[in-house]
Length: 124
Image (tube, rainbow, N blue to C red; front, side, top):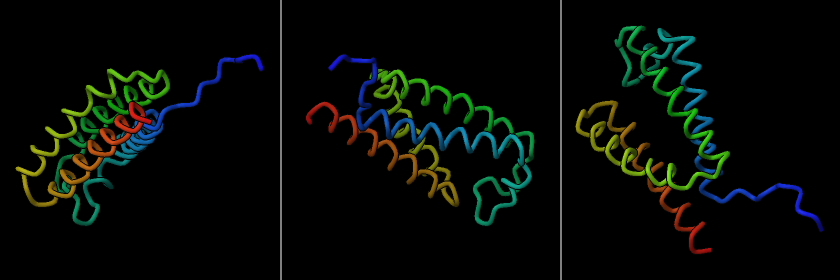
C-alpha cells in the first residue's frame, strides 16, 4: 500500500495537542469575558482587574498556539522543553498559596502526564 503522507501521532503529540486546545479555549474565554473569569467562585483570579486577565489571556493564546503547532509537527524537542516550565510554574503557583494551589497541582500533573507520554513514546 502506498504511503499517502498520514502518520499516526504519538501519545505525547495527542496529549500536547489536548493541552494546547485547553489553553486556546482559556485564551478565548479570558480575552472575551475577563470580568466573568474574575467572578468565578474560588477563582485565583478573583478581584483581578480585567486588563490583567486579558494579559493572561494573551499569554494563554501564545502558549496554546505553540502547543498546537508543536503537536501538529510532532516537535518532540519543544514538547520536552515545556516540561521544566510546567514544574517551575507549579512551584511558583504553590508558593503563592490559596486558590493558586489548585493551579499548581494542575500544572505539575500536566507536566507528569507529558513526561509519562514521552516515556511511552520512546519505550513502546
